[in-house]
Image 1 (tube, rainbow, N blue to C red):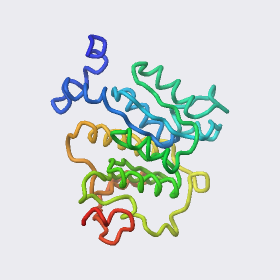
Image 2: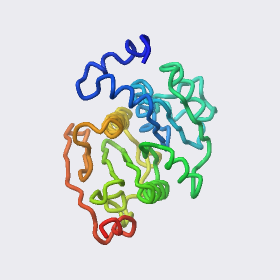
Image 3: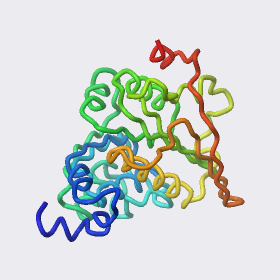
Amino acid sequence: MNDEQLLRYSRQIMLPQVDIAGQQKLLQSKVLIIGLGGLGSPVAMYLAGAGVGRLSLCDHDRVDLSNLQRQIVHSTLDLGHSKVQSAAATLRALNPEVQLDLIDHELHGAELQQHIRNADAVVDASDNFPTRFELNDACVKLKKPLISGAAIRMEGQVSVFHNENPLSPCYRCLYQDIDGFTETCSETGVLAPVVGMIGTVQATETLKVLLNIGQTLMGRLMLLDAVTMEWRTLKLRKDPQCPVCAHTLE
């Protein structure tokens, strides 16, 4: 690390859980972020600021005026532009050292698996169940940690699925039947800072996963009720009948 890096990351390096060795590890890490909306915005900004060396940014959408209330990686000047290009400009201004891979289309099948294979951790900041399920399936198959978040109205949730650990539940252990869970922010609304709160927890958990420090949210589901400003944590057990990860117990 050079003098500029030591100064840039000094507040993080001061932490005994990080130190210079941990910061060096972050600089050598790669994270795939699916979605650059309300959740992906703070995730991408905090991971770039923290010095994660390479970020793969995936989003096929363009910046719309209705996004700006909560998607803080974009600005009014970015209206109509690709979200990955808009986010990249913000992240480069924040930390020009971070290498960025820009994916401005949906990832599926073999291409999705290749990007996951190359990542040290995957962040699910998407907004629909088909994407979440396909992402989970690929992460289980490739044994990659998945940091999952969701937010709607004034509620949110976060969990970490350590798919490299055969004892860890996966996302499908949480949601096998999605009936009644198909609402979206465009239909029901969301309070702007709520997605930021969930996204910053996702970013924190991602750094913990990369550094292998602390206790992650593996086997736990953290729930936010912003109306009463209460956090609850529920135990999440591996489903022995899970159609995706049950085989890892064999």
